[in-house]
Length: 245
Image (spheres, rainbow, N blue to C red):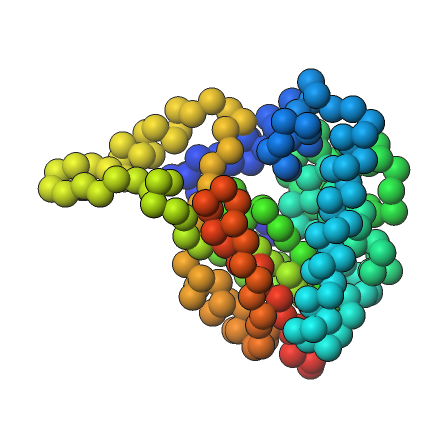
């Protein structure tokens, strides 16, 4: 069962449902070309072409890291409008794209590609699980539980390509505080976050050791890391293979 948002966290699922209804492509890639009011046929094709470039690189990295080619039954977690899920069909026999945004799923299905799109997390096992620029928008407490859920659906010998953000540049950090301000900061932050307009994109950093621990405990022992940088939000793509039974 998909982990529900914590009562203490902002309902980020609601933000993505709003984005799916209003800005389904810009919500995936925050470039002016992909805003609904700027979307042209050429921009739409460029959006999906970028997915092919990314997945092509990931497939090469997985092969280099594990000696195994991505194939079989695959899952793209947080598929949005299908940018990566469609590209994954070049390598996998079948691809399921999962997302919680009905609007984005509608756009993905409208594309008429080879992947299948669902709003309920499907049962495993999967031979390849991919997720990119998704967990960075999920509060870590919930995100770590979702990673456990995904790893339980990964088949023995299956491949994983999982992206998380882990640190940010200084100008993106909250200023240091001491005394009473430091004690009150979590309450003030929670109050401010809860009142942000629906559809606001939030970024969250993960403790990489906690992510790696979950992968290792699930049988993904050897990992390769590829660094990412989204406007000063730094992360890694973890690439590995689950041990065979």
